[in-house]
Length: 362
Image (cartoon, one colour):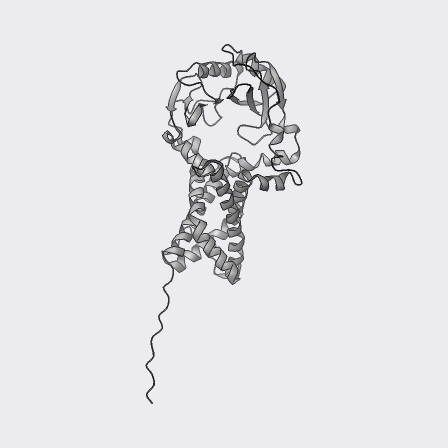
């Protein structure tokens, strides 16, 4: 038990602040669409009719400035279309095609750099791996914390904040609030680590297969496309997509980035939890002709289960109750991590000084 306590305290003192920042940023991102609601058109109802989507594509491709790399259509709780350009640039447009906000870098938009920090720590793939490892360490905190709490379970008292800002009170509060949120903390950190660490996700959802087996079915077909035409019939392409997958929501159009790339369309079928779906269709960029498609609902159970990880982690399912639960979990993680660092490095108990006894007279 002593070694468990030492590991819990030392690892918390070292990794605690990173987990605290990940928890805080995640809590803020849960309500991203809500705090972006001040943008003009953000509260407009979502339009998914073929004519409206085609008009938005035409408007996006004819806006001034650089051509977008992708067009992400409005959600049911956020009425703006997002145009993504190279080097983090982009714009929000209403569903009539009017640009309402534009940026030249991700640093110009709080929601973009906050998302990049939470997912990549501003370090791309290296940062994502570091965040995933921190999540695995966080899982050990949950397990060891419950073990350490069990010995003192009779002293349990639920408080949202320490009774006073002394080290014993903070440690007691840390232990008790941690065990209350232990299931949600475990879920949040397990799903976060699973998303970014491919060996972990492969072991869980495609055991016995090579790393990357969960992503392989979504690879584009081995067909080269031509130059993107100026007068594509987007209405016809969206109609084709709807014929392939009736009832699916058309979420995103990714335009060719390199010579030979195809146009990729991403759809969300009713059973899918992912907000942008994983059902894919490819079209020729020179003619708009259908090339191939991937029906995620026909894929193995492991892949479909893996696609539920992100919606659970980011509260994209479950309505407002789950949003509040995940946001509260992130705030608790922020509190646990920051207090762990503070008590470990700055409020450690002072060593007791033993009084010097005078020598006995002989």
